[in-house]
Each structure stands twice: as C-alpha cells, then as structure tokens.
Amino acid sequence: MPIANIKCEIEIDYFYKNDKEGKIPVIFLNGSIFNYQQWLSTYLPAFRELTKDIYPYILYDYQGIGKSSPKNEQFTLQGLADELLGLLDFLEISKAHLFGVSKGSMVAQVFSGLYPKRVVSLAGYGIVNLLYPKLNSDDNLFIERYESLKTLNDIFSENINSMNYKRIVRTIYTPAVFQKEYSDLSLKEKIMHWILERRILPLLDGTPIRTLELLFRYYAQDIQEEIPFYASCIKSIENLPILLLNGTHDKTTPIELARDLNSRFKSAKLIEFEGFDHTSPNIKKKQAKAIMSEYSNFLSDIE
Image (cartoon, rainbow, N blue to C red):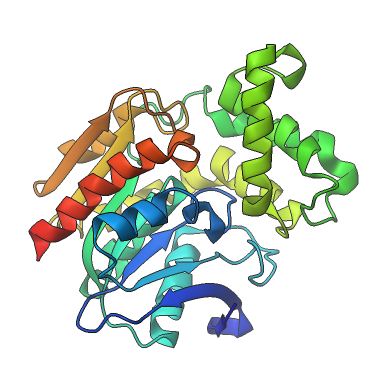
C-alpha cells in the first residue's frame, strides 16, 4: 500500500480510490486501535453499493497503527487532526467529506473545528462527545481497560500478531463486548466470540502493543485535559452539515453522548439505531448497510 510522508518524517499508510472525476472524496476515520481494514467487510461495501460507487474515498491508519510509523509520544487531539491535514496536503486534496467511527468521530469533529475550510460535511457512528457532563465519572470504560493492560507487560515490546492476539482480545475486548470474562461465557457466547476473534485479528495485526497502552491511558486519564480545546473546536463547526449516528445499546459511546452533542448544533441531524451496539456494525452487514443508507441520503441531500 502507498505511504504518505507527512510532518517530522511520519509515514502514514493509506488507500486512495481516486477514479471518480468531479466528486469530493470521503475520508473514513478509524475507531480506537483498529487499522483501516475495519471498513472493508461491512461499511465500505455498503457505502459503495448505496452511493453507486460515485465517490472517491480514502482509508488510512493513524500513526502507531498498522503499517504507519510507530508512536512513542502520547496522543493529542491536535496531533490526530494534523495527521489528517498532512495526508490531505500530501494528496493535494483541498476539501473532503469526513465519516468517523468512535475515535474517528472525535478526530472528524476536531479537524472540522480547526480546519473548517477543508471540510464539506461531518458525519459519524458511535459518537464521542467530550463535553457530556457525566464523562468524568468513575464508570469510564477505558479506566478498566487501561488497568487490564498491566497484565500484558511481558509482551509490551511486541506487535500484535497471530500468536498473541487471542490473549489481547480476551484481556481487553471480551469484557467490553460481553460484559464478562472469557471463562464465564456460555457456549453460544463462545461461538460468537470465536467469530469476533477471527474478524478482529486483521484489524489489529501489526500494531505495536505499546500503542494500546498509549491510547487507553489517553482515554482514561489525559484526554480530560483536552476538554477545553475540544470545546473550542466544537464552536467552529456548527454551520457545517452534520450527521450523528448512534446505537441505542452502545455501552462504549452511549446514546446520551450523541443526544447531548446534537443539542449543541443548529444544523445537526441525529439518527438512533434501535438495538445496535458499538461494534456490531463491523460484524453485521445489515446494520452497516442501515448506517450507510442514512449516510448516503445525507450526502445526496448536500449535493
């Protein structure tokens, strides 16, 4: 895959499908620790089908993810936005539509606030909202995940691979998805878990385990210091076309976050998906298609 060389010799792994003339490209922004393969099985096929494949699109990995440059310093909102800016400049793209999942929705919001002239529209599923009043409570899921990481100290120097990923998934993701430890899963849940493990390896493969530690510490602790910066970005995007999408059963970014953010914008539209959770659209094609159907309609309305 091609590599973009951006600021300070950072290399960003990306894929740019650019065979459509006259259309503004859509940038898909990854969630959490996943690489851009997270789009390939459900979201992207649905998007291409529903839009009749008329849009150029870009997939890319943040620094520290997949084949992009390793990351040693902590994540920051400014840094994540500037990576995207560097990629757009490298590709000589003046404006784009942004669609982010989870962390990607936050990156889209901040980028849009910092560089509004580079953004045509803003949309996302699994909405991050740092201004939600209860965000600072002790039930922050990432505090528990960050604590769980300490049991992986012996493999911190490794990249995620086929030999260690099951241990990582069962330590970090199983409690988050199933609300219980792997040993407590029922037979039916273990079958679902087996499917999850098969799906999740390509999304994590090659990423340094060190990045997990950086990201979860950021979510559990450091991101609180960035709330004033985030708030200033939010004030600058209220005039953009905005589509907020969220599942009603989402425990990672609960629906209340999207509702609160929607109330802060004059031009936003919120669509709630009954029964969807945070990760299920990555696995269930019908759910991804429902989300992309709303996004396709949103893009059509803008044009």
